[in-house]
Amino acid sequence: MPAPRKFWKALKCPICGERAVFYVTMDAVKDAKQYPVPFEVIHEDHKFTIFLDSGLLISRIEEPKEVPPPAPKKKTKSKKTK
Ligand SMILES: [Zn+2]
Image (cartoon, rainbow, N blue to C red; front, side, top):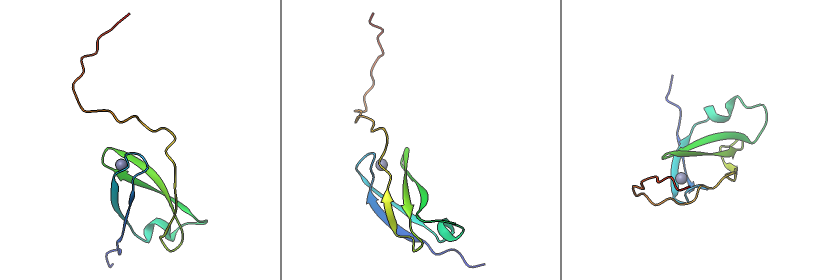
């Protein structure tokens, strides 16, 4: 069985705003009964959903429901202030 052909995609991650590079194969859409097909993209430690048409083109990108605030990476001691 030949290896599935990879179609590389790059887009701006709707969550972190960085460039997300990933690939899809025809497997993502070959069994679809309707289009576009949701496809989950994992980018670093988060993920978002895009929708692919029958030609593996990105039909649309799902807007993240919750945009996490850009948290600066620093150690914060959680103080309970009441
Ligand atoms: Zn991202």
